[in-house]
Image (cartoon, rainbow, N blue to C red; front, side, top):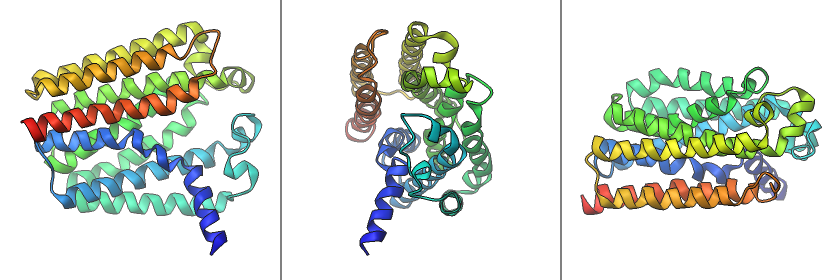
Length: 288
């Protein structure tokens, strides 16, 4: 029994299950904006299951596809597969189980979600290979995460709408911006292994400015939702608060000091997505 719990902890750490907090608020934001209120409990449940299934599959895929590279990187050499704590065969089983969960949840949501599930799967698989041939890998990761709010929107409404696209683009710039920051840690390793990233392509200083520009564009697209959805002042307060958090995040990282990247990446970004969701919830559900 102890070994089972130990293995479970290893697997959950392997896919950074706790970091689901990054994407989940945006998914539920898409759901409540689509419903203009609280969706039905069954929709909320299956959106959650779909999110967990898709994200788990994506993380297992990334760990499996990159495990030989991870083994050579001082920052990632202690991950589960390089250390032999989880085998590649076991990881394949986890991937299959995660995708089955995702597809079943999509089927339970509606026909369009189920039809779009293979496209989402293709994007999730593609991401792990992009760093091998294009510095646009950050955008592909952003597109993968943007499927959370767009998918949740479609799950509730049964159709795609322009505001869902606007929210999705905001998420693309948000994720791409902080993934650039995170990639700064591996700039020398990427050069050595000839892996592609914006930091390797542009260097630290210019990459920091690109990240700032992306986060500025994220705020712009979130502001576009204000007239598009006839939202109120609490939504705007949430965007302002998120912008302040992003400014704080960028203040932690300087060209000559990257020591606080982990704090900026994991803490500030979790608060950004949660902050926007909470104030949107207040605006749409409580204040109306």
